[in-house]
Length: 361
Image 1 (cartoon, rainbow, N blue to C red):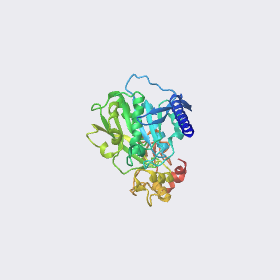
Image 2: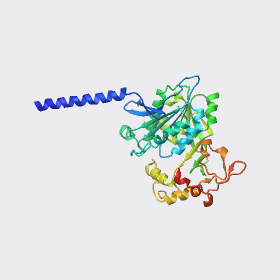
Image 3: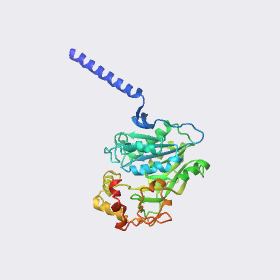
Image 4: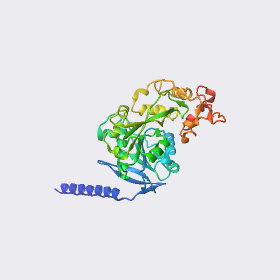
């Protein structure tokens, strides 16, 4: 009997400790790290951490613009380009990065390491969500469920920030960037066919630090919609599945040649790692998973998987690049007209060889 009472006493003490710790988490004031403070975001079945600006302007005199994207693997350079390109026309960025890959394996939070740098580029606008749970344990979903799970966090945060039905929302991945002029036009005149969901068609699909242009004639960029559409149940999945993004029942229009897609702005070694943990395993095989192939691919503009030859950028017109991307594009020789005469098939002018660019990004 004495042992049983001792056991009960210990269990009661354990319960009290857990309750106190839980209440302390809820009641703990925001912690400040650099130019951000940490706050909890309460979802239906769990709590995640959000890095918020220490100050921000929430005064509404018009519909606001929210750029929301999920971040995946290592391409912090592309995230920087994304933020720099749209900072002047966007009121809030909401970013979700998971601590798990699409295959539900643990991964580092790459964007967290450069968060202060992003803030210095675009102060008081960036809300970064650290998604520390795997969708596998919560939903039992497939390869894309982790990305859909991150999109759900974006929607929750949008609601918490007071998003309204008439706001303008761009929803995509970090490497899909709407043209700033498209956002400006929507702010001035609204959607051309009324409120709804629009798909953007990519005008330029760049690989390898903007030195190579894809042979694909078009590709899908971010979805653009008014705030009311964001709460539709089919939005998280539609954003990530091409067949649904093309579904006329979902989208009521499109903006052609109004976005960029930037792919594989990474070192050859990082491309191999990306192939190993990406949702699509077909690239994780010989010869694509060898460093020699990846180095050669970046020099000769070969697509990183499938061996498809890309259309080389000959020449690169800086007018076709996001302003923030020009620092990352090759500049081996320039004419007085401002057009870069970079030739990717010539090893003598390869930026990878000239400036060790592939090792330094």
